[in-house]
Amino acid sequence: MNIILLGSPGAGKGTQATALEEATGMKHIASGDMFRTAVKEGTPLGKLAQSFLDKGELVPDDVVIGMVLERISQPDCAAGVIFDGFPRTPEQASALQEALQKHNDCISAVLLLTVPKEVLIQRVIGRWTCRNCQAVYNTYYLAPQTEGVCDHCGGDLYQRSDDNLETINHRLDVYNAQTMPLVDHYRGLGILHEIDGLGDVDEVTARMVQAISLANPC
Image (tube, rainbow, N blue to C red):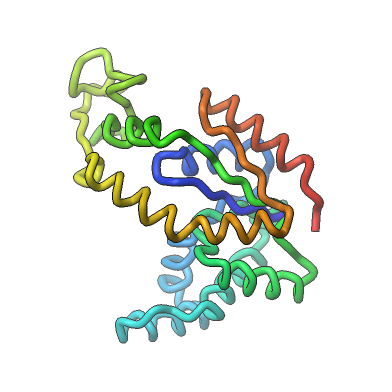
């Protein structure tokens, strides 16, 4: 079974992808990581992709999908895959579905994490990260015991330069413009599951696992 994970910036995709991987045994594949690995390892498709990047051109969908198929054919993907960051458009989604079908495979479910905009903004602009151990805190609901200091290792806490109100509003606008057609595409196929992203991590994970259990295997 393969699933696609969708959600706006701050919805918790990264956290939930890790939790789902542990709960289901499926392999989390982030498109950026997959892309960089193929190029770094110099696979034939990785080299082809690099040739486009060297010319400053977008890598064609068929090359990207080829890398996806190459990646999910590896042994660690035998229990299924959680796609994160790909596909990004309805065209890519259709091309991926066609390519998977040729290998007797498919996308069984698309999980859309939904979180109110005001909560997304708090999650992003209130986020602080430890420079030493990478522990994450939030001013609004998970503040450190001492301001600016990590509870775990005593390291300094910092905010990413793009964790500000102007940037998150822009990122949300871009996400909505780019992703809503994809959401509509999968809703039309009857495989979209909207998951309430509020609550603690385990509660949200349980909702996602429940949705996966209702999906049809390939």
